[in-house]
Length: 168
Image (cartoon, rainbow, N blue to C red):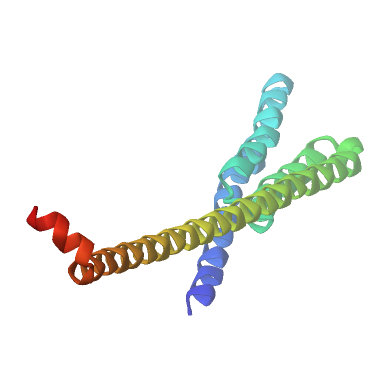
């Protein structure tokens, strides 16, 4: 049930990322055709930089960053292609390659996060085993000490030499 819930939450986050990216790409669709060349360059830089920042907050999910990046870059590329038809194919290709690179980075992050979790689980397991071993050692030491004290008491009562030294 917990794993299914995690998958469901991941799907929700992916959908929210697509919606967020789509909301950002609306600016490209609305404003790229009507702004100056310099402003287009600035918006282009922002539209390519925003998905890169998304890698840092995508929870190491290539699906979340893929949805987010594609939702921003595909509409922006289409709009750019409408404004500059001679650049349409190149821009679309670059947007797809850039999205693939971002997804590869997110996949690497995902592997690193999973490895980190595995290392933490292994460390926790080793700490628990060590604590259990220490408890067993303490228990064995306490039993050995009690046994030694019991032998000392029993040997002290039955030994005639011990009695002689006690009374003198």
